[in-house]
Image 1 (cartoon, rainbow, N blue to C red):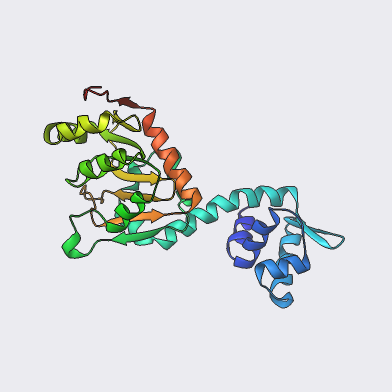
Image 2: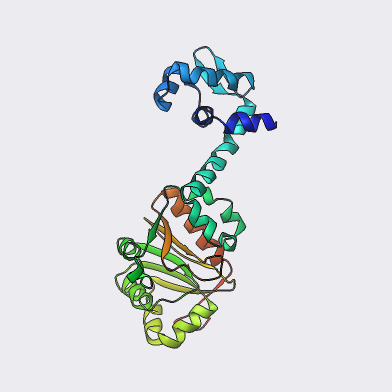
Length: 263
């Protein structure tokens, strides 16, 4: 079986064909068009997959064997994971991703089409303008934060007043800071039926926001300092679903804050 791993991972053409055939049988013309390949470049790769029992040709169509289907099924998330890690390799290497729940971490490949937004030096301690702009164009907002930026209480209160669905989870330390420094604003926000606040029992070591259109996450560096300059963001549907699942994970271990600011 180690030979199968080599066969699948050392050729981009073979990998793409397995993933293509996972959707169903294809004729040679469909393969050629979908993968933009030539006969001289692709047919030898198809023969290798046939020899290894991963692909079979019946009449004029190519399809996966039972073993080929299993390989392709596990290849897709593996390939997505490698793609996400490779595209933003430096970001993942420098940050503490171990803080993410294991069931979400192993799905890191869902953060498709992600890119990094970075503040300029003079804006290092300010929220990313792109981050705030994307939230303003969203109807619902959910997020988790272990930190409190002076801009955020007024910003999220404004969203609630505008009728947006706002759901936030704070760590106990972050909530205590809000309660101490922005208590009036806190109570004002809690009176809106479309605004909800929870306190998390776990020590979330990251901050993120997910909306109906956008996902953004900031992480701590490996030295324990929160990286206020860089966020990884994506508007891909799979990344939004990943963010919603991350929020649900922490919501399950959080306590709601009532209209008096208690929980």
